Image 1 (spheres, rainbow, N blue to C red):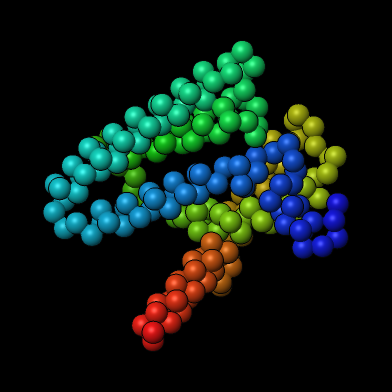
Image 2: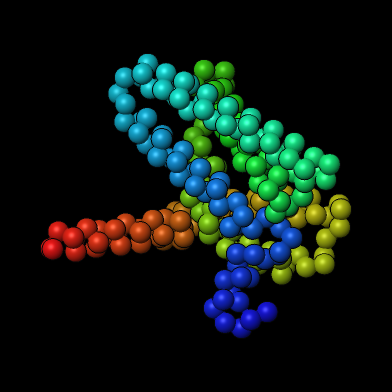
Length: 205
């Protein structure tokens, strides 16, 4: 371990080494950004029929096809080693991304075709999306709390209790401080500020 900034960054981004690392699965974050941008553009379409057609033909179909290709490749690639169930392997990355895209396409299809009619708002998912990066950075605290304390039975109690506690904490946190506690939002604001300053410099020239 290094007691400097590089040691700290290594601990945050690669700890524990045998778990899923943020950089190895950075593609999922990029996909999330693209999906968000797509829905932003879709929601600006006033014609509801045109909106539904674009979602079904462009988004759902593309997601499903790409997801199936990635999912299949993840399973087939090095199938003799069953690499897709091993963390930090190429197979596992393709398998996970493919599974994510297929699941997203199915859920969106069920909602758009009104197979399911959720009456409540997606507040639960909003908290975990809005504070996702904050949760990831803070997850090391759980490692200290439960270090060598859990077994095959108690781990499920710990996971359930922690999950409920985090949900309640995020709800309170959002009401009290809002985007100030969201590292993802702060990074967005920072990137926007930098982009605006660059544009101002260009306009002066």
